[in-house]
Length: 355
Image 1 (cartoon, rainbow, N blue to C red):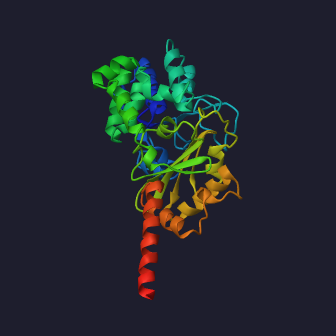
Image 2: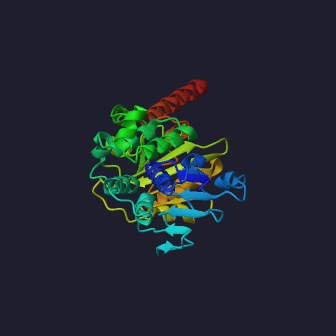
């Protein structure tokens, strides 16, 4: 394959490393391949702009990402409305929505031996089926260390490509590869420290918490559940260019309450959202102008139409001012305190004028 596209997460990285190992085993020089790490926000037309620039006579592989008709080979496990729930294997399309990772599909198709531990851990990471939330912020497994590193790393395409090539060059020995790249357990300690700081930025309404981020991955994933274990659903809204925002929403499977809402389906069906995902976690992109509409839809989804938003009278002057301050990134508790002070001062000024 001349051009290899892969999702820029642990599943995508390990999928690309295994795929390149298979190419090498067939005596293909992997150095001829160009690697393209792709973000979740590139679903839809974004990735097409890159693919359109590739010469027609050069082959394309897409791993752990949505289907594109120009791909010569495609591996994915994310549910596709076009393909449905059934497994598909055409020699070009390798799709199985029941698989927990793309790595699982690739390893099975290429008959890799002795990678069971890699499959098990990638499955755990990609499906977020950790035994508890502490495992995320304390485990010393090499793939968990890699996952922690990716949480706070600057999103450079070359960084992801180098990680794939080093892991492939070391026969998918992740521990040895991390040592060569000087990635160690300090990454886990780092995300643990960052997770403990998210509480002051969490706005909770009913079953869901919301965190506004000036950029994606400002806080580690699942930080809300580590800081406040009783949180049932967590949502993050991040800036994604001048006119749109990136939404992430997930269920806290460790809170003791079962999720009955298909979050991926919810995101796919909203006409103004470009996104999707799994049953318990989803993401998408919206225009800035649609944020309030999205929050209203989320409120109805999680809390029901009759629940009063934020648990207070939304027409209260203090709450109105507080909600405006929250949109700037201020913590809701601080915002309400400041709003109360402003309302009190304004009332005092009006009294003086009347006197």
